[in-house]
Amino acid sequence: MTRSVLPFLCIALFSTPAGAGEAPASPLTVVICYPGGPVRASDAKPAMDSMLAVIEEIGQWEKGSIICEFTTKVDECHRLMAEKDPHFAILSVGLYLEHMQKHQLVPVARPNVEGRTTDTYRILVRRGSFGSLADLQGGTLGGTHLSEPRFLKKIVFKSKIDPAKHFKLKPSRRVLRALRNLNRGRKLDAVILNEQQFMSLASLPFADKLEVVFTSEPIPLVGLLANTQKTTRHERGRITQALSSMCMHAKGKELCQLFGIESFGPANAKSYQKIMTQWKSK
Image (cartoon, rainbow, N blue to C red; front, side):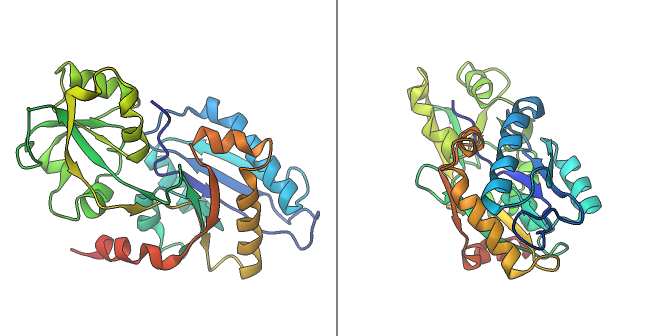
């Protein structure tokens, strides 16, 4: 299985220098969060360092102007957002929606993953075991996308069910392990997958023994977010341009490949209006 892109929990803190090649008054901090994913901080650090070097080079910042942190824990992401009040962020959809008002976040660059700028979530079961979400009530749901239950409730299930009450949630760091347990009938009744994980399912020898009982609507991917209270239009454009070139850069490819990203392109704020409405609904 390829690494899932989930929604990218990165909190990037930039304060653009006065001119090209000039160091900022304080370091540009990048906090990268990847909740529920299989990427460990020690594995991600080389790619993060490459990303920073590429952004500094493309954006013509002085070397060392940007510092980086990485975490896979949602609580740690919340703490870093509160303490740092970042200028820029790259977050999962759920974390973006949770922090958008307090930090005045707007999307400025969106990732392209295998030709897609949206994600879709599916729930798989053993073939013939369950026919619907209603049938799964009280069952055990596994997967790597269970650390943000409000996002699942509001956006993935559109408030039709509360996954924390409808299922017994069993988070996993490795989606392949969850799928194997599902296939063997061990402790799991269903597994939730995002689009990238689902597309990789065909490579498994037991793929034909599983079937989909739920498919979400396409959900727009979130990439780079800007705090409009702390950044200028020029700063936002400069960072967006650097990201747009990163995946074509020899060193920048390492980070893009780590998260399965093909490229970054400009984001359209209107693409997120629907999920913003869903998030605010009771």
